[in-house]
Length: 254
Ligand code: ADP
Ligand code: MG
Image (cartoon, rainbow, N blue to C red; front, side, top):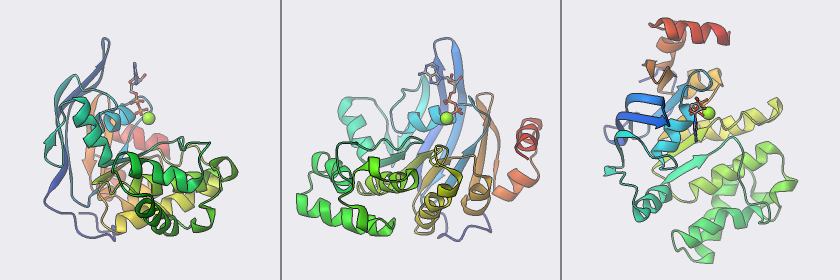
């Protein structure tokens, strides 16, 4: 789709299917009929003003929030909200938050092993081996025995990404993964994400990093006022937005 993206071509298969998603909190309608499909290997970046519902949308995809109306399918399975269903769903969706959410009392390696053991039933050896491979991939093989509190924010976020990847997710969701980082640490996390994209991972990324959106995303989706105000390849959305809402939002960024 995007000329800039260097990662493999986007596949036909729909990994995340969202149909008429409505989400209300009490009387407030936050998402008002969102239709969005994310395809195999596609990187979709969600942008939009604060309070637009970006986090809520991601949280609906992995069942942290229950939709008020509509339909969500992940990997062809409709989300039903039974406990078994939610657990199965979460096992295959990687989520990375602004706050790294590592377990502070566990080492880096223990953090990466625990869900592999408890959710996927992997042996300790298997989980450790996978952990070693992934730590190497995010450049932190030497930190396996460290505790999160002794790592920089950028390192913690890379561990959080490795931990999510250890579950062999079909899709990775990122909610402002670099917003809590000191500016000099942002790049190392974005580099890991870009590598993932290049390897063909399906990703939904909420971010304010417009350079990442421009260079890595196949598609940018601008959320505003409960709906999709604008979507398309990065250069189209960023350089010639077609909606008034899109123009205002992007002008404020510059
Ligand atoms: P964004 O991530 O785009 O900044 P959010 O998805 O966090 O926006 O929030 C969208 C709107 O939903 C905001 O008005 C927020 O106050 C409201 N909201 C989010 N979570 C809840 C909740 N658990 N209860 C009530 N309102 C919420
Ligand atoms: Mg948010």
